[in-house]
Length: 317
Image (cartoon, rainbow, N blue to C red; front, side, top):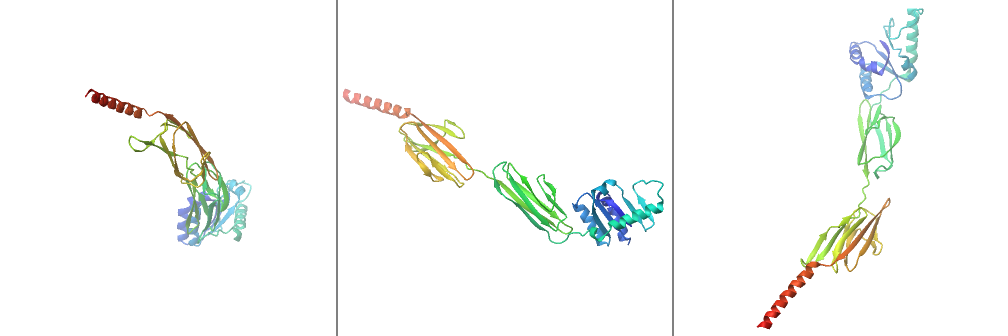
């Protein structure tokens, strides 16, 4: 049995082919394909056929495939063809033509050697930590594999290549390579570079409570925070930046990435902090506005009234 067929027909004949091979029939198959890629389904079926002593030839020829001229020759006597031919050609001539054509394709160079054994995979990215939408290059080189596929809408690829990509979030790229014996997975993980924002904890000393109390800004944005504090009140700024970089303030100079700064508020005060990394610079401005502490004034007024009352009572006595 000699058959010229495409991959779709090859897979549809799976059951019949295997049954005939198990019955001892000699089978030769020529597979016409548009390119060198071989699906794992085709490879698996080809392996079963070759294990049963069938012969398979692989011909990469898109023009022949488009002709859709598939046929089968049985016992070197019978011809079954999908295409209708000119009635002027005799059956004998047509048979000889098809037989000669089949023999011309079933040569040693077209014999399908299925890859087996270990698969070598190199899969890497030129950057593994990137900013959102930053471009990076995925590259791969695979040996001894019939099928190579990469997830995240990349799909089937050649044995060797590269592609430019960008992502919005942490993303795992998985390459899967297969041959008739093995399936190998390799992973490249792309991490989005997260830069620490310049965040402060602002506390003020409350003399009535005799401790520092954290306060919130009266207005805030990504680059500017406004705070209200009492005049002559002690203020403490604290910060903790976990990533590497340079941190400094326009008047205070270079600062540690973790630390604090205290001052006594006397008048409107501005700070301009900057955080410099390899790829970016952030700026944060803090403005402090002062107010009189009415609680102390009321407390003093109440104490004075008590003192005046006591003094008046003493005078009366």
